[in-house]
Length: 186
Image (cartoon, rainbow, N blue to C red):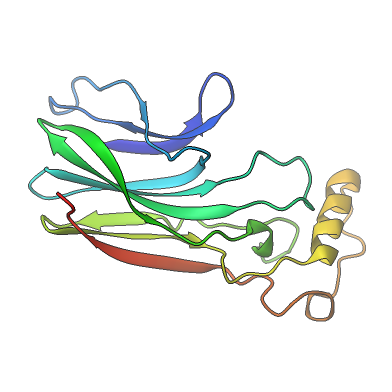
């Protein structure tokens, strides 16, 4: 099983899955598995040891692509399940859809850009799957930082960086890693 977040020919983001039923000699065509309105960002699969269940976790933006740093964006973590028959997953269902947050609350150490690490992983047994994902529900955006990031992009100058502790809510920069355990629904 392979999964990744990528673009189709029209530039639309998706979460893709491919699989092989012959030890990797041939592969299925990519199949999109994200929920309607999700723009995939990171993804990770976990196949049960007996090969009968596939769990897939992904992060997704739920708003259109933004060309500025001040418009709200939404990010969510999602956990899916599919039964696997003769090596092919089918019957995708949503096991979990997290609480939406705004990724503008995230920050690199230098504050210039948002930062969502690739902390999206999954593991499975024959009875359940576990998943972790980036979560920004407890974060707070900071208008002073959003405005400064816009200025940095326009001028390529770091001048005027806001004093974070004075200009921003205490929850600015608060990003978390959430996890869950999900019983095999089949």
